[in-house]
Picture 1 (cartoon, rainbow, N blue to C red):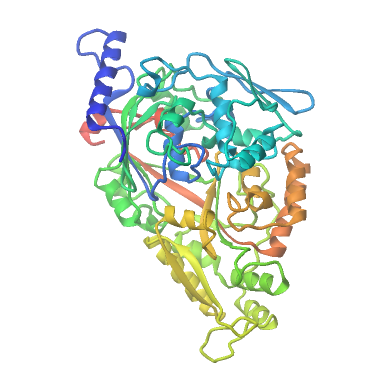
Picture 2 (picture 1 turned 90 degrees about the vertical axis):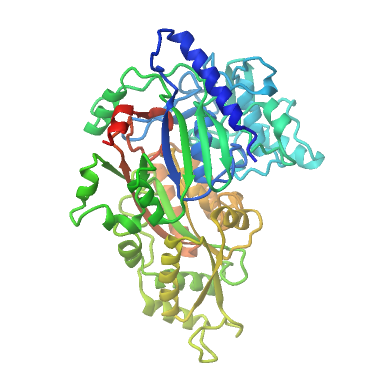
Length: 611
């Protein structure tokens, strides 16, 4: 159970009101920020796993973590194209001439949310908090799937990990040359070698600052603090019913911060949002209620029924929202609802477990099996039917509009069932008993299993895969579990043969995607457990090169290796359509910064009027 009680919430708001009364003592004045009368209602389509930055990797938990904790840097909310902005850092890193020493100043006067562990004292964020938080990510006891963010990067850090493995305990008090707090407000990172991808990771929620006192007071056997997050962000966790609902309330100790102005050349939507929020202190909204709604129809019904303030439209329900010309239906426009649409910095793909005895391995027969499976899947039908045209077939590892996406590159095998059948025949996958399904070359049954959630979306995808693979004589069954359980099976227990997953990243850098096939990341982000020495060599080389033509050429070669060995079905790039109620102010669809609730406001008068 969540450790924050309802009474605690009432006391928190009572304290917030006292503070606000002190700042603006005039009678009956509306709160200037953190207004408890303003509640934002949103939904996630997938259940969360928990709110400790280091061990969390799922997309939806990260949304909450970003509002409770602070990374050094964040995506600039209003900037297009993507741009990095300082968050708790006082500015961009100062990087030495050789590219190896990064010095980062920490803003003064940032405080952790009040918690009994601090014994009534205000606890200021310091550079040492980032040192400790980075060390937690690589501590073997924590078993963080994000350890690859720092592994091999900082001088002395890998040695500290090796000592922890040998002794059974990470020494958080031992000095690490490449990870130091020079003083209270200065963090210095010394790299093993120049690495232009480091900024990508400094934006990630896993590298947010946590307080050592909190971990030591509330951590479980793994030192995880999933249900008692205490950060420096704009919100605090007030209620958590696992897999059902989360409630956040504004952090009354949040630093003074205001909505940013529109950048030069901003589009009309951005300019309107900046005008509506001009001069407003963040956050304006006092309470955020997050519901888990896994099925598509209930998601849209919840928005239509007025219980959600904005919602992403499930792709399979696009015809219920847009007409044939792609315009909102009158029932939405008459209610003042608007739509924003972007292509996500995401790849939805299906991986093959390269350690599996059936689909794994790098021998010609196994590669042929994987290639035939991919060639049997009709991705155009998948886009047209399952995604209602709100996606496009993926052509390479890095999605469009990200650094490292190569315009003329397409490594996707064509949809070609005839060639897939011929390939299977050639490598000994034949139907020997006449039941319509192929056997393995040794005569034993060929049975594939894929992870799948019990949702309509996955059920529709499953039907397409079953139909397409039946056409080439392959039987496919499914492991049905909720998403968090499938993630555990894939990452911790290595129990899934295949699974269709998505990877989305807020850094703007294609490194976040090419690392998905980097050998040392096997079992972490590399769920396929693909290992190839040449790919790994090219990946390491790519980190030493700034974004541009030289790095793109390395990425091209890495894509070609992936094409040759087929560890994935590449899948699709997704579009996302979001419906926004007219009383939600400050909303600008940012593909790299989904659900940034601190930037929003609720117009209570419009909410009361219903438009």
